[in-house]
Length: 258
View (cartoon, rainbow, N blue to C red):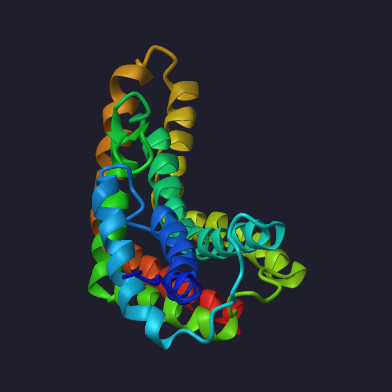
């Protein structure tokens, strides 16, 4: 008695889940929160498998390509590039929030107070870490993680597997969006920077009027206390700017997939 194994059918069924898994896995490696190094790789892998099992049945027809062929390898690169581009666009929001915290921290004299960022594995000022946590909370409160999953499912219809992948126009749009990171970082940091600049100018005038005044002993704590006060008073504006940045990044991602 011989057992016939339908190799062709098994290969087709495997391709149904393999191609979406590449895009979903690459997306989870780069996306905010889940893509951080503090999230175990096993959890990301499990989440990618679960999302693939949920989204694969509604994905359009998969190509029947051999992964080890030239066309298959090109397809692998395309799917990984699409997933990385989608996660990178939203990750810019948190990079802009961290950048604003770093700029404020440096202006306040907190550049020496650093903290290990578990999401990136590098040291950043404590204030930047505080802003990053705030951005994550705002992102979760706006159901940004659910919106990302929805856009991920949408990408399989607007950018089907076995198509051309990312076009030149999409890459140009993605690169143009990176400039928004600096724009919103300055919007978030501008109130505190302006207040600290006024204090520094005031102490500069005072040093000319009273040269014996020890500015290092007086100016440093005053600038730090004023910075904390401005951050506290402008917390509502900060959250509003972060919310707008998140909404526009999700809209830009949706426009990128159209």
